[in-house]
Each structure stands twice: as C-alpha cells, then as structure tokens.
Amino acid sequence: MTALQDLKYGQWFRGADVDGDGFITQEDVRMMSARYIDARGTAPDSATARLLTEQMDGFWTNVIAPMDQDGDGKVDLREMTEGFNGVLTDPALYPQQIAPVTDCFFDLVDLNTDGKIDQAEFQQMFDSVAGVPSEDCAEIFAALDRDGSGALDRAEFHQALAEFFYGNDPDAPANHLFGRIAG
Figure 1 (cartoon, one colour):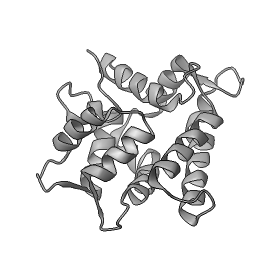
Figure 2 (cartoon, rainbow, N blue to C red):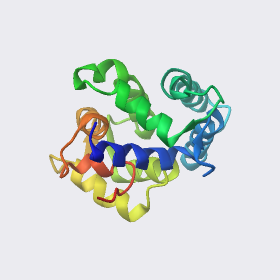
Figure 3 (cartoon, rainbow, N blue to C red):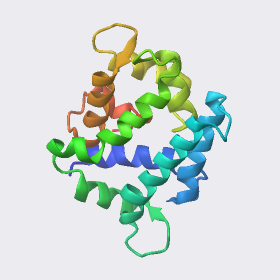
C-alpha cells in the first residue's frame, strides 16, 4: 500500500475513534450511529435508526472486528491500517467489500429520498458521524460533485468511496472525504 492510503486510513480512523481513546471498538461504531441518528432528528426506536444500528453492527462484526489482531476487543490504528492494507487490495472487489455499506449510507443520508445527496445532507452526515468540519464538507462536496448538479447521485457517491479506499491519485478529491489529510 502507499503512504497516501495510510494517510487516508488514518484520517478515517480518527473519525471512527469517537471517544478519542486511540482505539475503535463496537461502542465507537454505535456512537457513530447515535450521532447520526441524533443529527438527523430520527427517533432512536424508529425503523431508520434500527436499520442504521444493525448495518453499523454488521460493519463492526464483518469489517472492523476481524482486524483485532490481539483479541482485546478493540482495534488500534496499526491493526486497522494493516487490516485495510491486507483486504482492500483490489478495486474489482469493491462491490463485495465496500458497496453494501455505501448503499446503506447513501439511503440513510438521502433524507428527502430523491435519489441524490445534496450538500446539506452530505454535511450533516460527514460532520456528525466523521467529525469533518463544516467548511471542509462544503469544499469536499463541491469537488465530488463532478457533474456540477449540486447533488451526488449514487454513482458519484460510490466513485468517491472507491477512490478513497482504493485510490492512489494524490489529487483525487475523495482523498479528503473523511476530513483533510496532510501530506
């Protein structure tokens, strides 16, 4: 893997380490869900909230927990980076590895269910869940909106996630999807 990917994965890790203790745990993943449910103004016992919580629990179980090399129930930056570097090696596997979670998030972020994510919806998700500052959200959104439509369709959203997790282009707009990376 490349130094750029390590930087991107580190930025993703910082957003996922909700309590800031240097580890990602199932509780961090649940706190990400709770943040978004709260920011969205969704009742915690609603079908939408339950779906998000179930999907995020699945994300923990199927993606993050297997990276726990020492079996302590938490994943540190090294374990997560090595895990991503070991698994996310082939962009052709995106449909199996990342696309299902991306589809779930797209549907949850698309608050008005118009099949697009506008800037306000994008900002609400990435600010509340990943802690991306509002000013960065606006700039990142504009760069990801490649057709200039003022919204991200499902294909643009998938392209951004694929670019983030698999890409090595230092100028790719999706490098900063989970916050500005240095370097």
